[in-house]
Image (cartoon, rainbow, N blue to C red; front, side, top):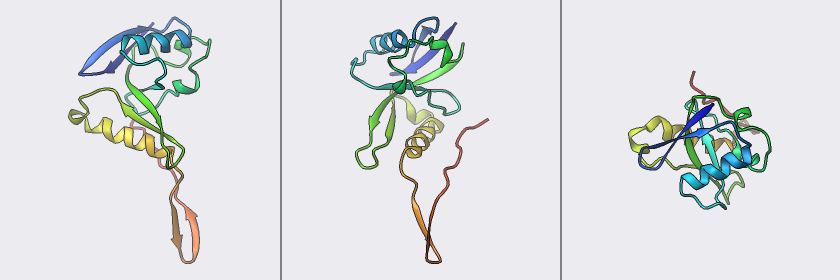
Length: 135
């Protein structure tokens, strides 16, 4: 079982999913030249974030979170000081050639912000989150 991780200047690396998640994440950071203190995550081609930052110390198998033979984009997870949510930054450097990736990243980052409030006829309403997954 393996997954392909996209990062850097069009780089692809194949990673074994038959290991503990804690070891997978450690090896991922090492192979991609990241600091071990960095918080990382992966996003699949549908825009779904795998939430690895919440499972970084898990002893579960990496294959329990990631699908076999799939491609994932490596993301850096940052805390947004204004909203307290998460912001995702792609570590794939050629985003300009993939506008759909940039759009997915913006949507994923915006889902973590507090919903905007709209005033309508004297009442305050919360806007609904919309799904961004493409089938």
